Image (tube, rainbow, N blue to C red; front, side):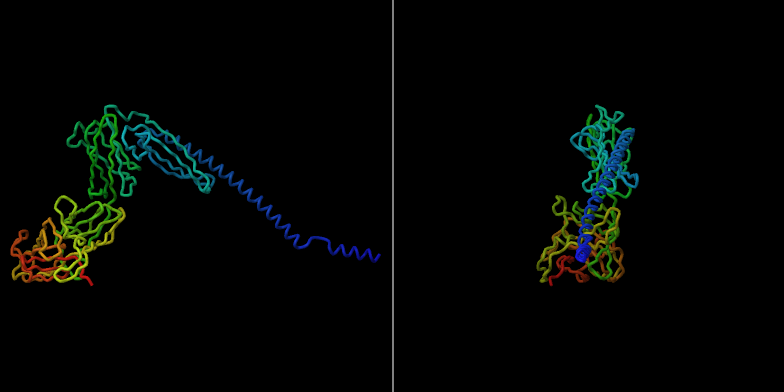
Length: 459
């Protein structure tokens, strides 16, 4: 009996599950439960994505039906809308393009040929899409419901873009017979303002030459013209393209003689040259603020009339510091001249003030009141580094007092100064002995010529 009890007691001590066995069982259960959970989540996501895709397809189909209901295809333009259904936000993007050539898809149908139809593409995306989920697309072409072409007449396709190539909406376009007209006649009605794509059209146009002019308040083209115009020739049963670039003008404040710390007088009729990668625009009368086309690279401002030396017309290098080479002048070693830094602004914005360096000199006027005039010289005296200027300019500093010491600022280059009894005609040239340069300059006694030098002295 005692032996039986001992055996039963031994078996009782080994009965049940150990801690390790419990942990292993729990891990196995967790793995199985996690797998089941992921499977259920994937199934739910798949169901939700399938439902969302079906709803997106319905929205795309509805948008296609809406486009077909538009009577005037010229009113069918790009549009993006959103719609929320069951907590999911759908973005419906529609693009519409006139097609004049089936092999070309351009914004306003430009590219030649008559307007045939509009190609419409609808794309629908929604919140919660995975990276592997494609958007829903729907495409169609819509033929005009009315006749917009005539075999004996032509069409003008007008595209208006901004500096970034984007569309300019709301621009006014006029199409008028050019000179010579070559058969062109006045249109019965002018094109509508440009739509959201920057497009408008002149239909049923008699063959001939036409000027297409574009205007929009506050906008200018790359030549600073507020009413830019292009010439197009219209032929029978074809479309002519007119492409114009305009943008909202940016404001450029100007500060003169920034290289001189003291006060100086700038001539009221001073010219200011705005140099860009597209050329030079010269503004008269010492402007303090100018509205210009917003080139991304901006403008470098020079005092005086600057003409690019590569142009066949008269050129002017003197006013450009970059045209003055390094070297020894009158025993002084100079560094090469450097243009002022460019300033830029976004469309409709305001640039940082443009710093315009100038030559500065103090003039001692004669014993009687006289008008102070400065006349530029086409070339500098021998021994100076003046690169020359074919454009002769005369600047006026008004009536000055008797024996007055007046500090004036002039564009770089060579000058003769006059104390004249006339406000416009130079008389009585001043001697160089009455001139005291405040910036780098050379005084030449032969001819009493003042050369204002933009270079800095080499350290």
